Image (cartoon, rainbow, N blue to C red; front, side, top):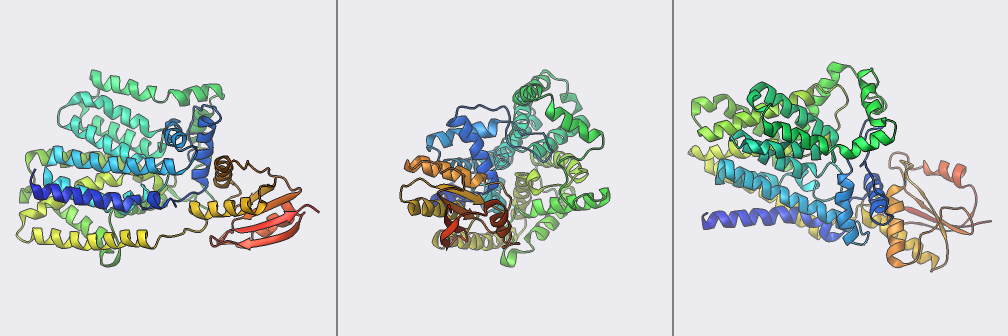
Length: 497
């Protein structure tokens, strides 16, 4: 490896880490309903000793992800004494591992030029950066898909025993984002049935399938103990039911749904690329370059034999997966495709590396990289020098409100009730528990007697909606103090009349 190449790799790794570390470093990250719900469940495992056989719920009523996501979060939460920061640091580390694995995969199978371009594209990918900054159960899919691609290419290049690990990786996906795992699982099976049928009934394939089924053991035990709740929910789909799969006004014709799914696929692709300023049309330009390269690759003789195998097999696999996504008969959520950007990034790394063949190709790569670096570094500097307080969305605003209430109580017993537009108060419940545990000041009850505080989160679309809560649920108590904090949270101190 040349000295210049080492310098470039180190620079790109530092850039990638810097763009991903801001929320962790500043200790101010997104902490919404999903994060609160998950950490309350993990708290029950770590601090209350209640083990679980299931993870977060899915879009289908009665069906849950596997529990490994919760047990993964349990490690940093225990080490950090309940501080949510530990789970965010783990998320950051997983993002860094994803980058390293993708670089290693591209270098092993495609050479240093493709590896560096893949590293660069992943380092500055907005969606990849976002996935490193807050905790959410789909985000580990980035790491799992990176591992999946490595094992897939091992199998493609005749190391057949690695199909076992391919199965294991797909099984793990159902512990984090079942819909995304579903598309990859059946897309992979479709790929093998159509293009690699000889691999299906080998001992490695069968052993791998057994390992895959073993990873569903917790859900199967849960299903058995709860009168086959998940099985009945899944079977309900085949009987024409749609429980939990549609939100209000979302049920549309099948053809319209396909159109919406295609739009979502384009969004997923474009989210892997920077689209700021002069780069707003970059996804369209990249698509044009990509399809032109594929159409004329034989005529131009751009790819080596090994690169052709890599590209052809990746495109076949991606085609099988995306066909399933496109014709999915229910509304497609963007998080179902979390981490799928890695498929596009590794292909783009290979395609763009071929620009070096043309006389002005190096200049084009240099100009494109310079523009992307300019916007990326500008964003990074802005995040560190002018951090976003985040209002009610980030943890600092919530903790400031909780700290204000505890200080106002001056160590005396008090009660606390919380209003949020979604009704569920999981994010605040967890932070109140952690703050009370950390400071030793205890956890307030949720009663309307003696001294009680109201912590009110406004609905940005209906800022008056909390008034109905005050008139119907609260009703009582004399207001002795009311404050609106910089986050926008309203705090009322009341005394029982």
